[in-house]
Length: 208
Image: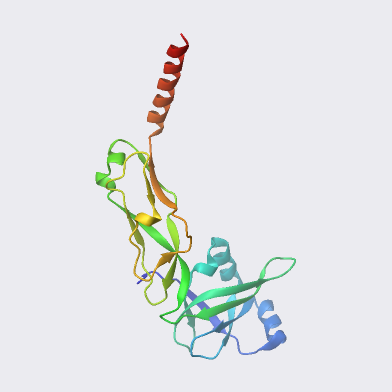
């Protein structure tokens, strides 16, 4: 289970309709609603500055949040829609969906690397590049992994680690169908330069 689900603290919105929504915006809030599950929809106000910060951080719609509303039990939610002003492009309304344990959601899961100390490629001076520090997976809300693990203990210079070689948690699968690269070990820049020099010398000898 993922250990670091960020909190999202919001306020319950007492009024409904356009008038209450306009007042919320004047008060520096973005009106929203929480729906789904076995509970009635809950009207909320989200602090504008906090929402803007999280939106600019990216992947807001694929992040699982622990929603905290005073007077209500905490609930896990995921954003389903952010409506924006047609001219200013600022958020005007936000929808969150409550998640059951069996709900399938798309989330970005961090990648953990093991085997670096014995990797033949790294021992020869190769450079490990983590092309995808996170991988988007379809996961079950009740069983979200903290991370996925890639093993580079047998990876040499010029080799890649692709998603097909990774053991994924039960019930999880990538959102991308093709076999994509997660990490690779490339030759150090000095070795690349030396190889280029050798190639130039060989060409010169051939022309002589």
